[in-house]
Image (cartoon, rainbow, N blue to C red; front, side, top):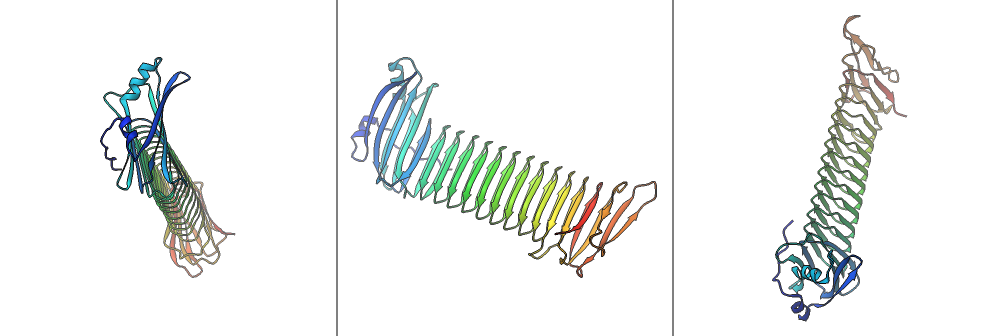
Length: 397
């Protein structure tokens, strides 16, 4: 995200006198801290940009016709004099320039160690762009009809009731999103990502946290370095990958590509072609209307095909585990199944007499068991293979 351009630093007392900004301040004691509270207003503008080197920022959209703000600086000092020195060192400037309302918090010299700041702004809901940037504090934006861009060096980000597109980035904390009407692009260095309802496309990336999406009405792309992924519903295409966590998918209306370095994968239903890969986990796929390509380094596989979409060439493969396949009675398909090291393992295809089961190998050596044939006149190929495990080919009911 582009850095917000710095405006000219002007003492607060001068800003308060400007016709565009009405502002006043007071200093008071609050428990063990000293607080400078600054209140003011700026005329409404198409865009709002806030940049601060310290502190949290909260923006709330409403019906008012101007921008009202409260800024609280907190100094954790014993004396009022020391606190006032810190307040003076952290300058807050506000102004309107052309179609943009600006607010900036800057340290004049060295920053104070025991110091915090809070920016709270009430803005017109119709603001077209809200752009926030803080070096490390939390960011919160609610009830905005336009676009939101939020960037924090390491604080959490919360967004809700945003009608336009959203871009949010933090160095390592959580990102929580309620309802968003536009496209959604989220990135955190290691925190969790939670999304309630996204009407646009979703791109969510985290260096290692979990990702939860309740509802995505278009395409979803999710990447995490090692956390779990849970997508309850997606009306479009899904691409999900994790370095080692589990992946749980609800109903998917489009195709899906799902990968994990070692966790389990579950899909409740998919209307497009599904590509699934796990380094070692089990895989459970249900209500597949089309085809699937499945590969796991060591877990079992269960795949239920129900038809309804054109069936494409499919394959189910595991290095060690059982495979259970459910096929609808009317699906035209050509089947080839094999257990490569079948000592003590079998293929059970008794629900489909048209599949011929045969075995190879000596009585004492490794055996290979296969099953092949056509169902309903044959069609696209379904390959099922395990190195060491049983294969069950059942009729879907």
